[in-house]
Length: 551
Image 1 (tube, rainbow, N blue to C red):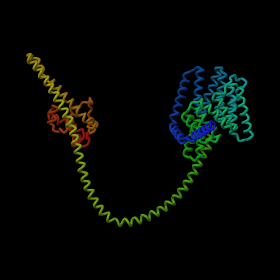
Image 2: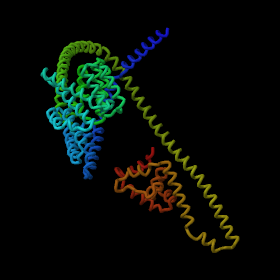
Image 3: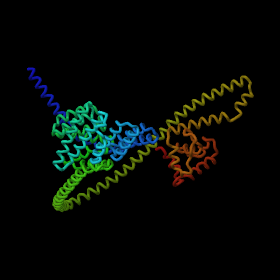
Image 4: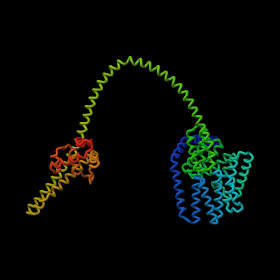
């Protein structure tokens, strides 16, 4: 019973794993990659900013150790970005390390230079650099491990690209020899470089599961989305390809390409691999976009190796495009014949339709006449409705203005009743105390009148602008630019604008305007004439256009 339960559980777990594998949405991953490619300029700018900062700091420092650190940082930035610049700065690091008598750093940088040459396809140069290092004088275990590992990597590349079988076997034998020497260094084999070497060994031996085991260990040590993550993801793609799991393989090569794009990596090995896979799937449009992007990156990285890898894929995709175009042209020919036949059929149908149309012409004419009369009636009714709507809008506007001003008027009346009562009490007090001088002084000047007028105009201005907040801008729009009015205070009108504000409210008579503003009728007339002379268009219709503001 217990044994059966365990078997059932393992079977369920297996099903879940299968389901998880199948649930990978490759199309969604491709869309993420497409979006990242669209933002390539942003990622490149971020890397360029870091490079610029390091170069600026490097130009301000004369200390060899600080110069070494900054040159090393520049090498790390250029390593996946521009091969020539990476070689330049790691060579500079070698010079600085030797100047500081630091043999460990000098050897380390020579090994990095050799590795960069290998990645760039400069195998002869890499061999010369490695041969310039005296193995017996390497006194650092990590450097010795890297020395053997770099030699192994060089012979692996030579074997992979060699077309002579006898030499290919020789190179792979040298690769295995150096991998075995790594074990003699006594260095911990738990860091990423060591695990990578183990993974490559198992992959070269055809042991996909063993390689994937070391890949799983590496995956735990890298940050998702980093350049190191892209490298681990690319090796996982190779491992899964060896195991025959195409879904996982495409997923991980896509993850590698996505991380490379986001990190502005120009050594786009994963991208051209993905393009090659998509081409085999028949997705030519996306394959072309990816290989074209990889080609642009390779041009910036500037290595013969990557260009030679991309060129065959680019050629193959181009040939497939041409074949696809030929198929489309053949299909177009077939469609042209079918279209011709359909055109003949259409002409026959059209001839029949015309004969039927003539029979219906008389009935249509009668119906047309009836429709014309109905349309005329509808037009008249529409005009009446439009006039009615316009009248309703004007009435609503007039009611809104009246309601606002009635409310303000009632408030103002109440305010002035209170003020008159206060003045009465004050005068009464002066009369009782027979303080005639104070009474005379209180009633002598125009200060009280001016103050009341100021308050009246302020109330009028605020009420009007509350009702028509855009009146000043709309009013100026009716004037020529040089005649437009600028108010010192947005909440207050001047006399020019106040006159036309009264006209907008329906008070057109100059005598009534003069009475409200305490000016002579002739002065009001002159103000109106001056403003109308600055109008855009016909000056005679200016006041009518003012009345229409806010409707």
